Image: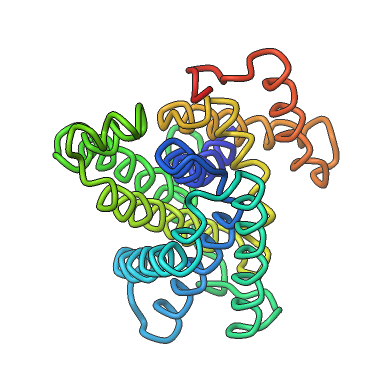
Length: 279
């Protein structure tokens, strides 16, 4: 159950980014998992080469991934804004393969770790918590809280919420939609980097690590209601806990299938998610 919360926290960060992009830009970003991968490898560079602690590594990875997200948008997605949804879908899949290849070329195909060796766990109320697990949970809570404050207390955040509700009305009322798009990619990049670094710190790094988590991320976004950020958090925690609890019944190799089953069931029973997403 505890590790399900840890995994759910990572999935939630990815699902928030996916929901944010879908809610404001109107397309499913299938390269989001690979942006997480790039963020994780930048984190590896920060820890092993620069010798940075995890908080500073996270800042480095967030800056690099946000810049990468903006670059991809400027070079590719911006030119396809008015294209059909299927064209956008194919382009995101193409970007996904490009980022996977980039990670493999730069860092190689082998598994990597942030910190080799074994760390002693904390003991709390009879539970054994690894330091990295505590960091992941607390870090995820802080990022979600900061995002909530940004969306509700800043002018840019309110503009993003308005654009998510109605793009045309936002343009009529004078909202700078181009700036909203820029901030959308910056925030999505930061969240992807955080999810990637947390995943890398908790497991191992490889060029397909983010892609392998893409199905649970979309399952979480759909379960909570795609386009609904708080639904993405709820969906991520449910998927994470469900996948971990399933190992007590099924072989661990079937964990990814649990997210897929939950996603399909939700699409059949309540297509707009638990908290209601975009129609």
